[in-house]
Image (tube, rainbow, N blue to C red; front, side, top):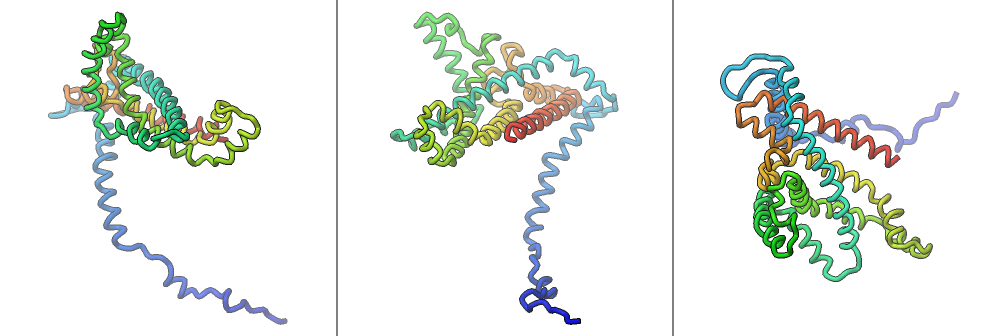
Length: 304
């Protein structure tokens, strides 16, 4: 019975294959292992320690003892913590919608055939490079001095007093300042997405007689929806952790009307409520994780 042999080009030289297999360079381990150690010591380790102390009566120094779920039970009945969660979630929802709408509209304008669009793009991204606390102090002066002066001159009642001293309107000031700083980053992502849309699509739509508004709703939005997902998830997660702008602008006031969860946690850690606020931080972490996973699942369902 005749046997067929493989052509020479098809034969596998195992020795050659073994020698040509890529080896991991030692420099990879020298760069990866120290980074992994630093990351573990800076983020996961403190988180684990904090969760451990959330089941104790630790105040930050001295002795401690286990008290079980007492901190968690107490925080769920604490009106200050409850109000901070309500403010944080409401503020985040309003801000993420405002930022995305404004950024998307600006992005459409800045990719259009207008003069000096490069200069305008540069101007619009300036707030992104300024520290949040600096922005907050500047706007605090404007809300406390400039706007009341304008309100008195024009006879506008609600502008005669500072917005940040009004318990009912202070949250609007926080939303406005946060959006002012957040729009540039979101704007850049939308510009990248819009520039990736093929021009042929719009040419075909023009031939079919579609208006600019119809093109935006039926063509642009579906094609850049993945960028909307990115901005929504990153924005909402960032606003849930809002801290520096609120501290500089209202410091959580008037009263506790603009007190965010992050401010509550940090304030408690410096006031002897270490274990109690660690319980709050643990619950907030779980809440943020659930919100992020929910956003991802909803967006994936929309994309499918």
